[in-house]
Length: 279
Image (cartoon, rainbow, N blue to C red; front, top):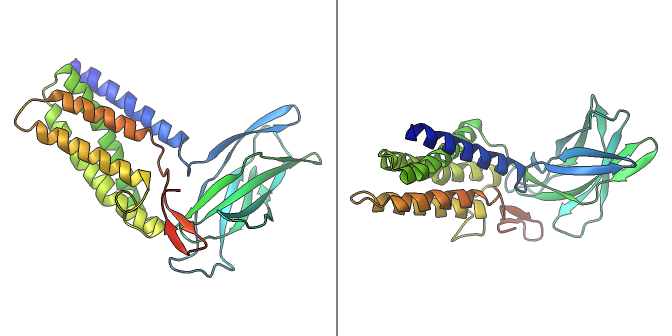
């Protein structure tokens, strides 16, 4: 019975953390409520897009990436355009008109280098009126990442979070298999976060590691922090029962996951022509 309760709570906590990560973070779609007269429409605008520009190339003329935005189902006859510029920087805004079909508007945006960003303002057109979204949407470009690397990375990070939650709860309930699953947590976190994580980042942005001590990427840094805490908890429990350390490691893992993914991540510096972090 204790094991059932522990697994149930662990699954609930993990799913909550996954939903939170999907709803936060600078690369997940931005949810915006747009006022159109007496109507308020809920829309999502992408903040991540694959680039066509190869690494170490600054010739981007003629390379475009397709940005798609779904229109609200409750309104027909609407179309839109965007005003955009490179970010950060002081460029003037340029306009791109959408091609809208079957409730989806598509924009051909000039591709930026991997980790390059643009800021864009969507403008909706309906019944002769124009309705501009108040805040700019910041979009980051990334190079394609192979599913062979990306999917195991995501699965292992999910598994690490699940077992971390279970071990913390099992330690509180004095379930005897906590140490075994602590080792599973440690292995999954190492493989998913410290092996596959850098491979994903290298493919997407050209750098293996941009966290501490080499950069300010919070995703890399928090992964290393979580691994070190779990290693210390597992090591301290090898010959002596210190269950409270498993509880502390589990809580620390949850706190780490409250930091949205990709916060202070890679960003292309257009003036220096290099990728920087901490922005």
